[in-house]
Length: 264
Image (cartoon, rainbow, N blue to C red; front, side, top):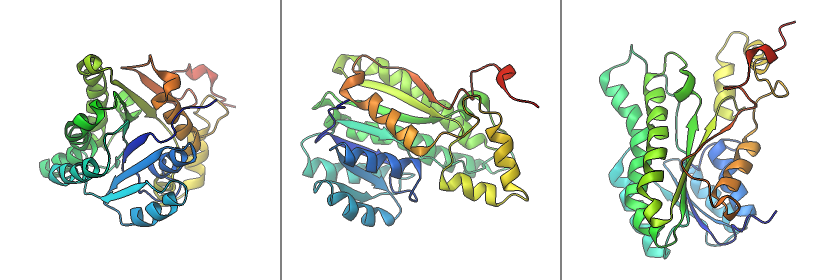
């Protein structure tokens, strides 16, 4: 199926994660579909990604940006506006499950909100004039933590809950401009960050198997490629009447009956 993403200008926040991260996987999937990825991220590996992406599409760009600082987001989007006539799609992807809990300071909690929630608002606020010119759409990357809770991660959970609220609010706000807004909700996906967490545990492999046994469909984690594939479909012209939706890519982890689990 042709997703008709060729030459679409797609802004991806947090797109310079480690190879195999969700953001990085989405960015390179976009390039393979002929889109023009524009990465906003603070990590300098984004410069290497820019070179790699430009071998696929010469217009791909990276703007080093600390997404916890709205003034840097504004500056980077102004640079994008100087180079491009508009933005077709925004993928708000940045996020860190930072362990900011009730035991953390109020300042730590606020800092978590800045990266995981306020960056979403600031990115759309400053990029909206460019998005309006294309009647584009927005995809917010969410987390099951907003639905289920997790424990020990108040900052991230509050942020991801806010992301879902913004998704519905923006879907309503932007109907008048023919702009869609959806959220893609992820549960258990084997990313480099997830593996790093497992590596901190005494028996990470046993923990991984215990988690996978609780995922109803095929008892396995969702791959970053599967997440990227769904993201591309939602933002594409093959999904033009979908807005205000929370789409789960989780192998049934959040919603399916626990009786499906193999407890033998």
